[in-house]
Figure 1 (tube, rainbow, N blue to C red):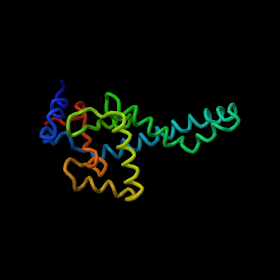
Figure 2 (cartoon, rainbow, N blue to C red):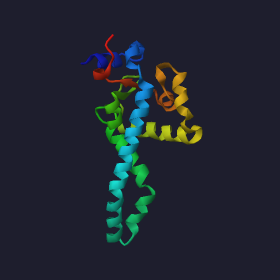
Figure 3 (cartoon, rainbow, N blue to C red):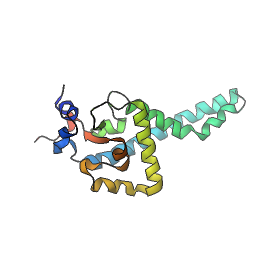
Figure 4 (cartoon, helix red, strand yellow):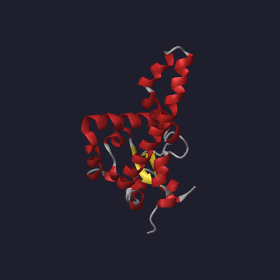
Length: 161
């Protein structure tokens, strides 16, 4: 068991280590940009596949274009955040991961609900949802508060105290 796992497994009292949250807001923005680009790449790769499927199915598969972007994004989130690393590729690059306050691992359904709540809040509040992190403990956003999750730095990126 690593130091970070020990800290996280004693949540929420274990979240008192300030190093877990240092620079998390900036890292979340960076991770979002990387993940957004990766989802766009996934969609761009899927477009010709759906096009060919549409030819084979006499146009029926072309109906997938309507749900292609959300399907690609939610699949990516479920596979990465719902996986053992509990982080998307962008989050891994930024040295952060999503954790639950009760210490349980993030499953694929929680990961999908987390993403859907983020986008719903983004539609309603525009990018101002990021301002919530300025006023909440552990730099949490609205969807984090709703689901009992938070984003922490991974051990290899923790600052040396």
